Length: 337
Image 1 (cartoon, rainbow, N blue to C red):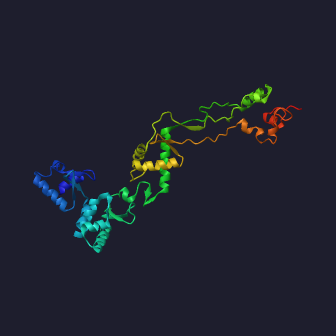
Image 2 (cartoon, rainbow, N blue to C red; image 1 turned 45 degrees about the vertical axis):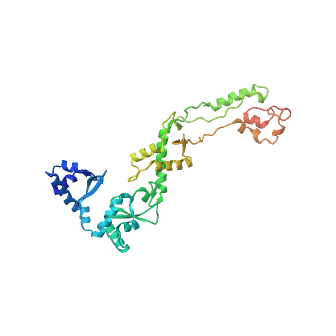
Image 3 (cartoon, rainbow, N blue to C red; image 1 turned 90 degrees about the horizontal axis):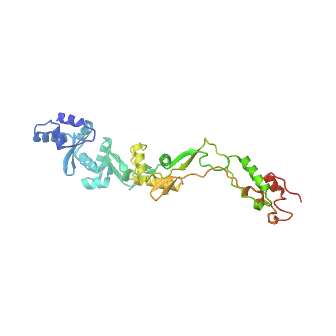
């Protein structure tokens, strides 16, 4: 019996053993002898009897866990069996009482004993806040009980959401955008003094200001060492599924698995925050913020916009040729009537 147990213990924890696996260990000469050894291990709670696709199989227990189970009384063992069957979905205390047909007093006493022996744990259900669920101590509660990856103790974890959204935003930016020099695709004149001199020559060379060329908006030179973020050309836009797979592979959220629905919930929140935008309904990309670079426009900067006699300006005593303020703005001399 001990030899069979040691052979099983050499395998990875949580391994499921079928009859053929136990036979290949060659610890018994006949099937009857193997059956007897397995029965002895099950009686000592060293093996847990299970079924998989209607086929019998076994799972190894540690000696310390088996020792705790051997110390249980029949009522505690009955409750433990039903809790074990529920796995990570857990079982409600009232449902446990209905299945075992024990009194409430005995149920409470046995559950407290199982918890004190570190065999089971009790958690409050997120889906049903008034229900206390019981499951084995070494199991992690399902999301229906403990909530999704963005929840902690039943409440949304704002700090966690903020951190993960920042990580996701950087990942999506790397997938949908590239960084280019600050003067990339910059077609504006780089020398403002030269542009102003050219414009002055054009203004002085025409008879009327209305015949002059339109002033192009001026943008100050951009530092070539600066970095701009622009969208990629025809990228593979991430989806909720691809982002969730990437996040799970990075194992940033320890002991938590992010489903596609969970990631879609986070991405939609980031869309509402203006950090992402949806492309074709199911894909996302980074939202580019407007540049802080100031743009100069002659129609706005000209003194005509707040001139008190603008309506009287035209051909006559008040005109652009005789306007002192217009001359100062163009750095020219106004005509004197």
